[in-house]
Image (cartoon, rainbow, N blue to C red; front, top):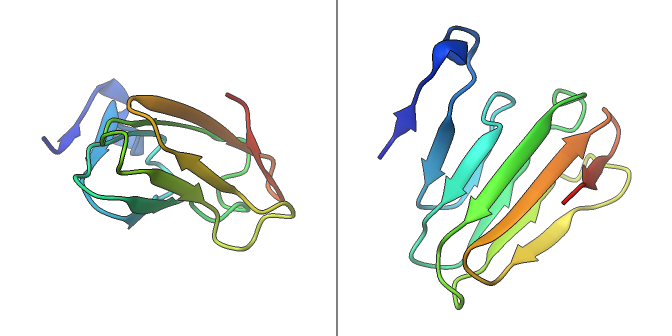
Length: 103
């Protein structure tokens, strides 16, 4: 599966983005499903560009293949969140200077 679209597609929002390998999210990739067959890093977009946005991530890549959600080194508080069970969810919010895990 690739990118599935809904009416917000005109402004770049997607229903979800399915990832099978390490990636850096773009500002508009706010709903993500990870189905990698190996451990991988998922990098959040630049904290300043993502100001006011919420990113929801679900990892379905097996208990032994952790997805680690990280920032780009630009957040006041570093993010390094290992999602090691399957499925695991995480919701992240940017205030423009810092990432917050809200779930």
